[in-house]
Length: 127
Image (cartoon, rainbow, N blue to C red; front, side, top):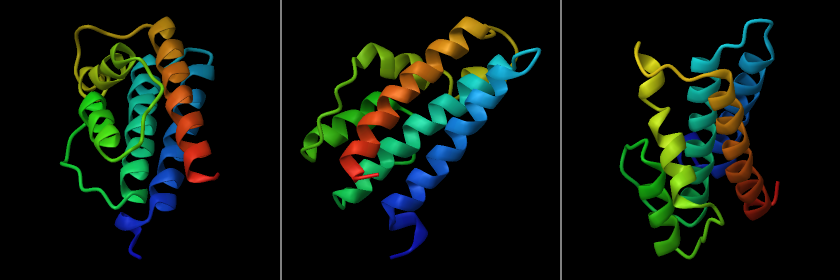
């Protein structure tokens, strides 16, 4: 099994993103951009780990709702409100450029949403 087809490798990368998101928010001057981006990346990588665990293919995308729908097609039913997935999806690109800057409160919410995906995925993957 190569790293790209190993769900545990994806989970390990997701964990690094989770750690980075939380660390960015804990700074004296919180790094909201980084926290939001890494929260989204954590969720994305965990959802892709779920798909890989079922042998499912997925496109190169940051769209968490699309990935969640692929999960459903493959018998994995994420217990997460689609609007929350859309909120996180926005941080995949929105945080890369000036304008529409996320706040520390946005970052806290993003981390909580990533935590929900993380919890579901870790339980599903037996971690």
